[in-house]
Amino acid sequence: MVSKLQALLTRPFMPAVFFFVGVGYDTLTLTRIDRLQDNLILLLYLTLLGALIVLQGRDDIRRLAGEAGPDRPTWVRWVGTAYAHAPMAIQFLLGGLFSAYAIFYFRSASLTGSAVFFGFLVGLLVANEFLKSKLSNIMVVLGLYATVCFSFLTFFLPVMTGVMNTWIFLVGAALTVGVVVRVVRLVAKNNPAWTPRHTAKTTWPALAAIGLLVGLYFLNWIPPVPLSMKFGGVYHEVRRAGDRFELTFEKRWYQFWKRSDHPYPADEPVYCFTAVFAPVKLATTIHHHWYYRAPGSGAYVHADKIPIQIAGGREGGYRAVTFKQRLDPGDWRVDVETEDGRVLGRVRFRVEPMVGRPLNLVTLQY
Image (tube, rainbow, N blue to C red; front, side, top):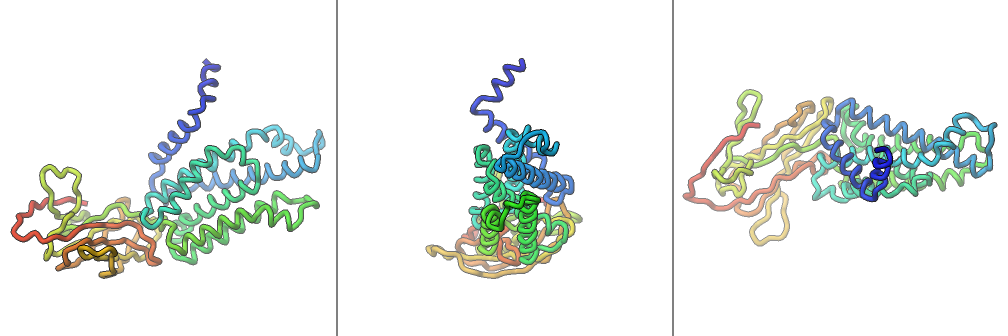
């Protein structure tokens, strides 16, 4: 039985099986981005990953210096014995972190604006399954470590402070630089042969990764975590009934998938309803940014931008409504944006003349 199990685990398709099982498990178990247990697990992964990088780096230095024998410290001999398994442990920790981030950032992303960053994360998640041979290179590992540290601080700092702005993001960048420098110093500790040139050569991939992420932020290509849009649509009427909202829209008996109005009749008032999740402590401003594209036109143009103050904590998201009337026929969309212009989600609909056509209106509660 044991030999059969070992043979199965060595099959070429098993890494792909473990990959999809791991991502599926994270998808089901990772719930709220402000859940303390999930964040503590991610923080533990980061701590263990940093410790492994330090131990592996110090052992590499000793190997290059030709230090060996029983006079080596016990922990160094232990690392030497386990050296062949260190890349596997690093690979496991990186995979767990990238999987969690891909899920959290996907929930917060409008792929029209954040496809590059989300593709970058997913690419690293998939590439990690094939990087085992490269994970003994401290430069490669430090670059990946900087990426997972910065990605964590990008949402963890707003969750802990209740503040979400450019300065908090840059604080996360500075903390990541500090963590990387500290790891490199621990690797080089008590090694007289280590020079500033070694430090620069070792850290430049990590600093390049941090610079890339800062650049993506200012291009508005990083999703606005820890915010995420849970629901959105346009309706004929929105009324509050106790703790719930009643959303009225047109739906035929066969349109079982429909939860919003599209197309929408011209000359009718339009309510845009959205629910945006935010962590418990976070209070911020979002905008309903209305755009219009006339028939035959190729581009959307600005129509209106309405600020909305939201507060965090509700599982289903903070619910907000904006209202417009007498919309011109054509294509419309409402971008749900943060204060710095990053898109949380998008509601699209088309306005058409429907004079004399009876409306079959139903009500959805949210």
